[in-house]
Image (cartoon, rainbow, N blue to C red; front, side):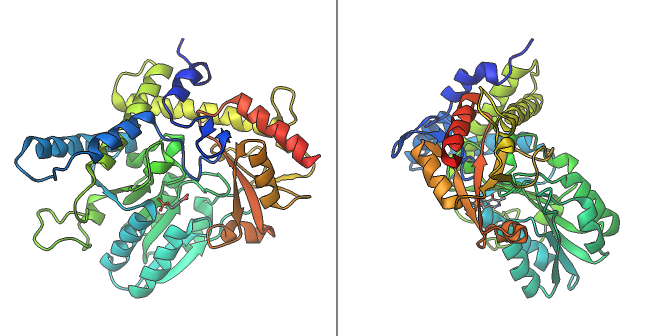
Length: 417
Ligand SMILES: Cc1ncc(COP(=O)(O)O)c(C=O)c1O
């Protein structure tokens, strides 16, 4: 009989910084994980260790060789986390910067003309890059409309827009506004049936903390994550690219061996800290299953994370500890419907009787951190069709507890009274 995350909660929470206190606010419940997840303590220690090292990579000295070895090991760890046997992984400035880089190379590196296809669910990182680089490359750009009621987009929604000259396509793995995931493999399969050579690039930034990444199962060419949203720190993004995409012309130093995608000196600490993230998933997987191989442990961790997050979402929607759930608060409207199987730890809502900004501020007064999403360049694509100017995003992770959800519901009861 193996442990559940709930039964391991003290050990889990002990691995993270600022779990229940904020240095600026004091005691607080953290439901702003979609904005940036909690940071592992090991990441902070590793960051300090690498920040102190003056030596650069590519030198014949022990410190340089040790950093190079660590980077190679971390790349193996990242591949295991992503389940990506082929292709290459590299770090960049941020998720947004990497998506722009991959999309620009795909638009310019595929045959002239043709079309770029995305969806209206997407974050502006992919949408903006597609509009800009499709235009420069002389390609058209169109979007499959997501479903307002379910807050996600399906292969069926993409289907009418896919043509044999769809050269580049983008898919959002999970929406940071609705919290709903997309069946990436099904969308990619639908695209490949009609446009087998299409370069498919996936924004996995909101999905990564929820576990179960499986690039080998998706049949795609690019996948981007932001480590600060998956228990590491700010300051870098990670991309995986297929051999096909890697071989396309891209920004690189003339004459550099193997035309690397990394630009300039890498922060060794970024690789090292992502190894800490992978190590955490392996630790967790080892505690919740009898798996011993690294990938099997990561998969087990992903299943346990989903189970815990689903339990938290159920508690938030249907009530816990005697508190009424959001679904039974008449003035609360839940985006994407109530029992939605695509939901990944996130509940976006509006209180019909109160401005979202007031609800966020009142929750903060109760020591609960959530975030407003406005109908601006980040979220208008989701909110405007729903006739909303804003919503309140409550985003949880597996280290959150039912007691925290109960405290949130108690605060909501007072705020909506
Ligand atoms: C789905 C999605 N894509 C892209 C981004 C941008 O990521 P970054 O801040 O690493 O540039 C975010 C950030 O919130 C996101 O949620």
